[in-house]
Amino acid sequence: MKRLAALLVVIAVLGFGTSRGYDWWNYNVNTPVSSKSEPVVFQIEPGELPSQVSEDLYAQRLIKDRNAFDLYLKITGAGSTFQAGSFLLNRNMTLAQIVDALQHGTSTQVSVTIPEGFPLREQAKFVERSGLGKGADYLAVAAEPSWTASYSFLSSRPAKANPPLEGYLFPDTYLVDPGDVHGLVKAQLDQFGNVFSTALRAQIAKSTANRPAESVESIVILASMVDREANTSTDRGNVCSVYYNRLKRNMRLGVDATLLYALGRLSPEPTAAELELNSPYNTRKHTGLPPGPISNPGRAAILACISPPKTDYLYYFTDRVGTTHFETNQQDFERDIATYGLSGS
Image (cartoon, rainbow, N blue to C red; front, side):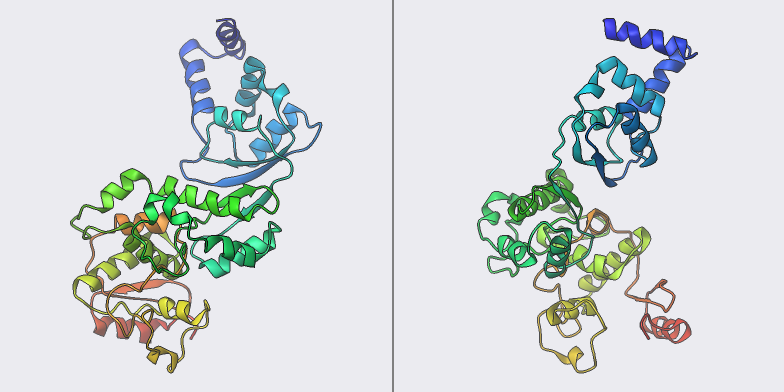
């Protein structure tokens, strides 16, 4: 009660009416800066004052109002318990959540940022560049068969899937103890489970007007292709609609990124000779989905394939300036390629 009384007095002194003051307080304490996940590695140096922490949080767009943050610290007394070290914060955290997190720092942790849409072999390079450990060690840990029994969402993976965790090592920013490659893999799988929640898994098991019922594995395969082929929210949904439309018509997907995966590279585009490769990942040769994911997709691509738009698109291409064009028939597709050119040509 004393803290509540103190809060009301301070708000009154600041010149707010009771109702307006409560709204201001509730908005700044309980509403995050962003509704989207935007991880930020935040550092508190030894001896840093709460006022400096407040300034840094505001500068990095983690809090909305420094006055609200400073007032929260005065009321709760939390400022004196801040720990020096590194913190993985997020712009979708509330002020109260951030204050709680700042009381539990670990100064020796390593920050590892893995972008969306890269295959496991490329993720290993990001791990090594971060200084966490060797990429080969990361690949070895990801190949351990014991992971499958620990995560129910891996149950739809083929028993002989290779690499075993391709598609499920969620791209994000992580704080991990030095050398703890195993901890990173676990954190990525945990985060996949958080994003691809039980509710989402139940949702994909039911067909909709825009897609059939799917397994976790098929959604991850589709999203893994989308993240290699599209960069904007609109394009992701439209690209996935092309895949669903083609699968429904038993058309070959014709995604060159799947063949590049089999070839072990991200670019350049396959040569004419490579396009003839008899690989199950050559979706110009084989109908249906490739045998497994070709990258580790992010949240946006996964959601785009769970809730795709309704379109009649069967073709797409990216032109020389990076714009993706969508067409319903081959004639318009070829005409627009001639007009706008292909990316990389």
